[in-house]
Length: 308
Image (cartoon, rainbow, N blue to C red; front, side, top):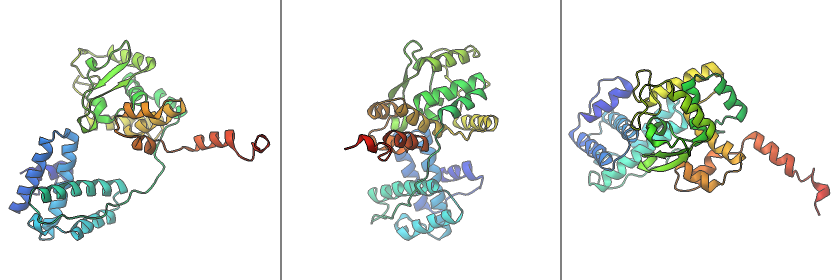
């Protein structure tokens, strides 16, 4: 069954939904996401989070979507919180459950809609690398790792977008690079600077297969790099450089360094692939050095003699 496969991948536990009504509704929900052409990573997200919630419901003797109430969702999220799960984990689970329950109601599996308050995400300072930290990381990198780090800092690409690139997606003369399927299935273009292109050329000389349809970033066996493989690479770089680096921190670093260099937020929005400026502002949380520079330049007291 689909639910059994979803749980096994993450937990290793041999569990299978046994309630026919839950199985039918869950299977229909996953098929609806496939029909919407959700990306493989989005499908895995829904398969796992939805299945875990339904397994939890069965443990509470819930056997039909009709029986699911808001208090059940709150109870499930409370248990995750007691397990010391992060704010983002709670929010991601709640988001998946909300989407599934909306589907259940729309498709007639539930007579009444089940609504609940989404858990809040604490406002924390997001990890962003300074220019000096980027240079420190690059000094600890192999030729392949250097190409990957420069590619991600220069474009703000997501992990799945990096692993999905082929050599034919990149115009080495102009730097224009085609992202065929970004988040939400959207296509867009990004641009690579000359230094990043030179690093990729250096990396390409180590590869055997570099035709247009060959992966840009390749495993040691010449296959496409996986998302988990990229995470392992980042762990090695963290250990070697001493810099706390993650794939998504490089996306935020791209935003901060681009703004410091004078890039227009509207251009950033297009390069990041967002439909609005909201996420650009979210990524662009002011860093201490930005606040220091701004105050040094515009302090009302230090500039009192200039003011009228």
